[in-house]
Structures are given as structure tokens and as C-alpha cells.
Length: 112
Length: 115
Image (cartoon, rainbow over all chains, first blue to last red; front, side, top):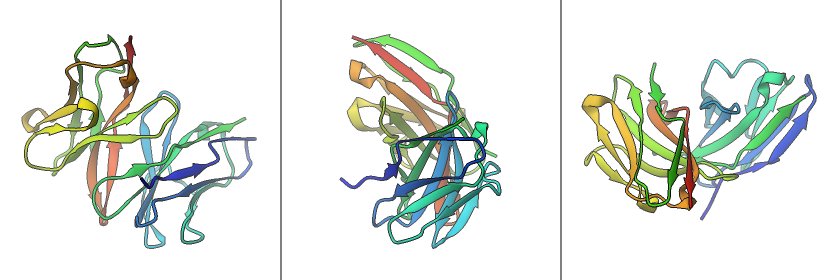
């Protein structure tokens, strides 16, 4: 069964550094998403992406965040200058036009 | 704005006990409702979903949920839990957005089942 994959599974970085989180969505899916989950809190929507552009973003997704689909398979989330409060699990998801999103295993980001 | 409330943050049960996890939402429009499960060390998986029709929805692994529109609720149930049901459970409400759907998640309920 096809699944969404994410790399790395765990990323440790110093405050102020740039990080890129990578996702490979399911191949015939058209919509892509990033979510984050701060430890002990709810899963929060960050951004959705369709047809090579952002279709919706939350207030969390400020100028330090960006997304890209650099080729036909990868979908990346870049955090330009990490802050301590960016430490969280970051989940990628993808979907076809219908309602169900399929989630990846997540990347745990730790900012020191 | 829509919101989702899960009333039980931590639930501890013994095997064979019955389970009911509460989920209430606030949203004025048509809703699509989901329960996701996250087993330890694994990713979010869909347990079941409600779009329309029969308000009693059956999902995988013996789970079911009932949509009660008048109560804005979508509670998850299982008559007899197993140790392998130990996981984090998330209720979610979808709203339409530009051809796709954006879920709002509840805070999650951590379920521990003792053998």
C-alpha cells in the first residue's frame, strides 16, 4: 500500500539555523499539507499546497516558513531561522481531490 | 472558526473494557468528521470517517462512531478494547478549502490499555 514518507525522522539543530524537512507524498495525490504538533498539544495545520502554489496557510506559517515541490516527488518545508518554539513533530500529508488525507510518520525537530 | 474538543485527555482501561471517547465540534456548515489513531512510534492513520448518510459509522479494528448533529458530537466507541489499542486518538473536523479540505484536530486522547 502506498504511503507518505518523511526524512529525517529526527532533526536536531541550533537556534537560528535553517532546516529543511522532506516529504515524499503518495504519487497520484495532488494536494499536500504540513502540520505540526508541539509536545502535549494538538495537531495544527500549517499550510496546504496545490498546483505548485500555496492554497491556504495558517497564522503559524509566517515568513520564516516556506514550502516547495522541487521535483515531481518531493515536498519540502523550510524553516529559515529556527527558534526554540519551533521544536515539534512536523507531519506531512497528501490527498487526492477527495476528503481523506494520508499522513507521514513525522519528523521530530529539536531546536537547541 | 471551527473548533474540536476532546474531553478525555488520558484514559486508562483494562482489556475487555468498553471504550467511549468524546468529541464535540463547533462549526456552522456541513461537516466531515474523522477519527485518527496514532500508535506509538507510528504515523496518523484513519480509523473512520463520516461524510453523510447513516450517522453510525463503522471503522477498522472494531471501532465505531456516532454522529449526533443536534449535539455536535462524534463520539468514538469500542465494546471491548485490547492491549493493542493503546494509542493516541484524534478527532478532526474538515472544512472545504479551495478544492481540498483542511482538518481541525482535537487535542487528542491518550488511551492506555492494561493487559
